[in-house]
Image 1: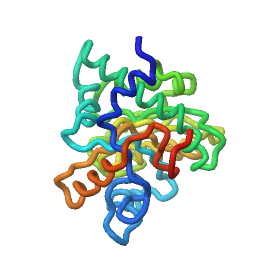
Image 2: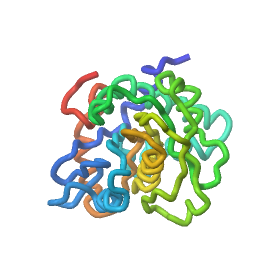
Image 3: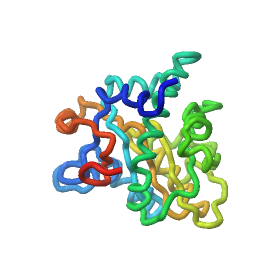
Image 4: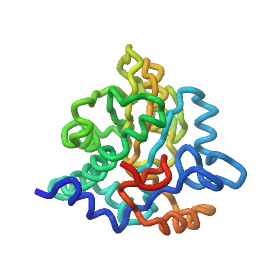
Length: 250
């Protein structure tokens, strides 16, 4: 059986390092932002809607350009069955496992906490009974499974909210001691689901909430997104680099 490093190394040719926050780069999701703005429109709207309920950090492991190999795998791991699903699931788990082993401490430091007490996932609102992301985080990944808790449940009107960030999208189990929560999601497109989940966790008593997302989905046909993707691709993916710090570490 391949090790976590060996399995995740297979992704080296198509992972795309997110650009650090700065001019033209959203300080929240690390997608494109209009010149003169610190966030993209969606992240700015989520901040207005949720206030302190929004996530304290959003850390994409890689960009996932539409129609690219990584975006394809993020779709196939939950929309195929049998050996195909298992193959993509184990590969993406290795990506998550390796990244967190190297950089979870960076995320905690960014959130000014010594570590994350609880790990949970953003659940599906599409009626999927068992989400493969849960198996990855709760059963397979050695750096998360001992801290995993099933906390979030979609509310009855979750789907009607569309892509809006709303504290009404999910309900959460109680977090009575102000636990710091590491919230895992597979794909960030607008961020509405992940930010809604963060708000529900905080309403239930969580302290700091950080979102680590496997892929920041981007559509290269929209606005200046193609240029953003090409700029990111110029930075060779390095496992020792995360978007929160400049240069190799971990």
